[in-house]
Length: 119
Image 1 (cartoon, rainbow, N blue to C red):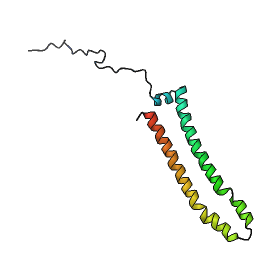
Image 2 (image 1 turned 90 degrees about the vertical axis):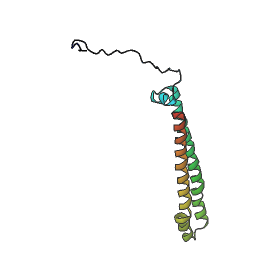
Image 3 (image 1 turned 45 degrees about the horizontal axis):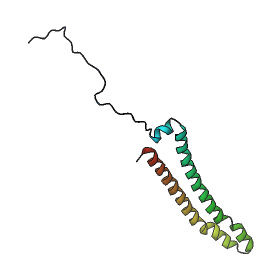
Image 4 (image 1 turned 120 degrees about the vertical axis):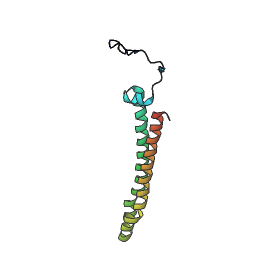
């Protein structure tokens, strides 16, 4: 069968056979990206949680470091004790407090991502 050179292939376009149903539900990530009121509320909830964590660390730090000047004033002749408390006794609790803060902040962020990503 000889083919006629004038006949060309025609590309037929039309609507896709499988269309996605668009639901009325917006994902939280979309709300945040579009900066809607709901998205703002999501971000504020993360910020409040992080602030609460920071204030808890600040309170523990204040309770840990705050009484030290009174302790040192009560014992003016114990200079070696002051350096021991400041150099060794305070270092370990500060490292543990910082480690707790970082883990808690990362957990807050993971929870927020789970909320936003609908996992």
